[in-house]
Length: 318
Image (tube, rainbow, N blue to C red; front, side, top):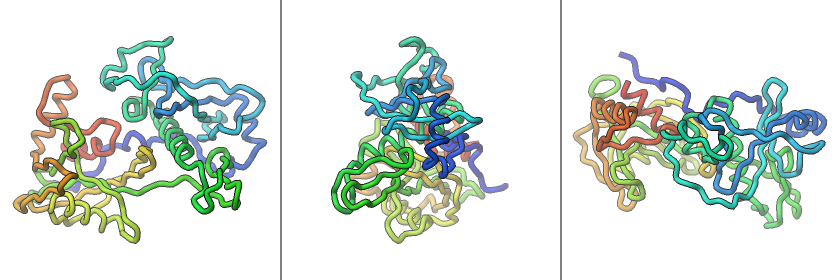
C-alpha cells in the first residue's frame, strides 16, 4: 500500500488565468485588456455576485477607455483580461447554505456570496479569480499606510504593489504561511484512525485536522511537530507534504502535511485553543461524508468543502 496523496487539487488552487508579472506595468496592453475585459466586483464583506446554478462568477463589462486607478488586474486568459474592483455594499451578508445554492435564483439569477461558501462549486477559472480578487482586496483594505514611515500608500502595478507617498517605499502583498496536518495512527502506511479536534469558537460537533502559523526562523516540518505537540500534546513522525491552498482570510497560504502518531499517547489539550480532540476511525469519517452527501444527520461535522482540510480528509478516507 502506498502513502495516500490528495486525490485532486484543493478547490481554491485551481487558477487557470496567466498572471504574468510584466503585464502589471504594461499600460498599453492593460488598456487593450480593459476594452473587452471582465470585471469582478468584491464588496467589503468579501462577496461577489454569482450566477444562479453556482458555477460561474457574474462578471461586469468594463466601462471607460482605460482601467480606473482602483482596478486590480487578476490575469489574462485567451486574450481576455480579468479585473477586480472594490465596491461598498449596503446589504449585510445573508447566511446561505452552500448545499442549497443550486436551487437559489434571486436578483435576476444572481446571488452575492463569499468565497468560503461559493468556492467549492465554482469552476476552476472562477474559483481562481475569486480567490485572487479577495486576497488583493483584503490586502489593500488593511494596508493603507506605509509600514516604514506611516504615510498614505497608493496602488501601483495594477494593484499588485503599493507606493508610499512619503518615503517612496514599495510594498507587495503579504502571505502568511500556515501548516495544516492530518495526523493518523501507525496501523499500516495510512493508519486506520485520524486525530480530529475542535476549537471552542466552532459549532458543537464540528471537527477538523490541526493547523497553525509558521514562526520566524522555523521550517515547515518543525512547525508541524511544534503545533501538534502544543495543541494536543502528541509527538508526530513521518511528516510529509501533501499540497497547498491559498486561504485569503485574510492572507494565509495553507501548506498541507500528513504525519503519524502513537494512538496510545495521552492527549493534552491546549487550554483556550482546543476544546475537544478524538481519534476517529476511517469508517466513521466515511459515514460522515456519506451522511452529508445525502443530507442526513451525523454526530461528526467535517470542514466545509472549500477548505484544504476537507480535501485531505476525503483523500485519506478513500
